[in-house]
Length: 209
Length: 209
DNA sequence: TAGATTGTTAATCGATTAACAATC
DNA sequence: TAGATTGTTAATCGATTAACAATC
Image 1 (tube, chains in turn cyan, green, red, orange):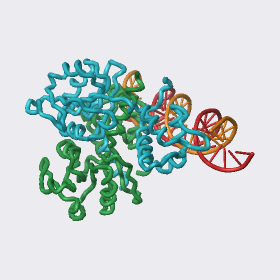
Image 2 (tube, rainbow over the protein chains, first blue to last red; image 1 turned 60 degrees about the vertical axis):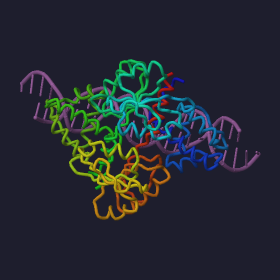
Image 3 (tube, rainbow over the protein chains, first blue to last red; image 1 turned 135 degrees about the horizontal axis):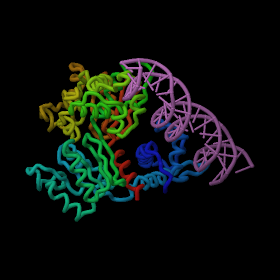
Image 4 (cartoon, each protein chain N blue to C red; image 1 turned 90 degrees about the vertical axis):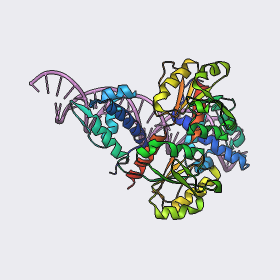
């Protein structure tokens, strides 16, 4: 798999996955790109183009088998594998993530949380233990950590991120309001910048007036 | 202001705002599009194009005045105005939002939270009171509510969203994993789909292998 | 076989980058 | 005035949409 697929396409995959999951639950067996495009408010053409980046999942004259396509997109997204997660920074956002069962169900269990605040050490949130940041190194060495969610303040995010990458963690789900960059080319970063999102909303409010 | 500006541009504005804010704090007075592009890992051309959608903020031979540009982008994003916010669904994510002072500092104070759980009624989180969802109507009528953050489960999100829009709330910051659509054309929705974000990360992990 | 719908190529549209004249 | 750097037009690149032959 080497023809680099654009992030525009990747960003749409979870949405396909969600709509197909809904259809599956409703017991729908097959769907055409056109029917799906109506539901999703997109175009049949885009759907077919997107899917054909990964292979021919449909059948002429029939459309797509919902269950099969759902499974295939799941595999493309790596949802057939378990990705162990740790959360660095045990604040409110961390709590929200660790209490949100859905991530675990999707194959992203949280193994542990880390913080600098000694009052939290040893406490558990939703059954997940909070460790001292000092224990990060030994923890990462003893456990397979696929993803580190960074939910700490801007100022501490850089150091934590570098430490994590130094320890071999290859992917970071970054909630801190900074742009992380690494020398190591195969570190993957996904940013969730809530204030950027809020500002975008604000712009769209303002521009409608 | 009518030449519709693309969301691709808008999505970059908060990032400009952040970098300019950092420069401001460092005491930098002026910056050229080229210097800024190096810092931001983008292109000088893109920066100039983006900014010129809104006006000529620079000066030939000089570059951009950091403070002036920062302020102007703030105004474009509507950060010179206060946007009152309520949070519907007083779960962990709601707590994270209401405890994150930054939003208030940016001009997005939270007025109140709403939930269905009677145990929460009357409680305050970070000084913000939790009301019953039944009180939503009277609250919205008595207070100016610019933004409603939706942090409740999928199943309840539709109803809450429709109720809000029916009451005249024009913009929704949607954390529920559904796509909201409204007849009212000037309702603005900004989605934060955390699981989509996580899946995108997962894809990028998988595709690097 | 006829009808439906995909997979895929071609056309269009929009966004990014390059180039350069205008101007501070 | 000379140098720097913008604002803006033109060129390129990439993503979306349209069209249609392939095929179930």
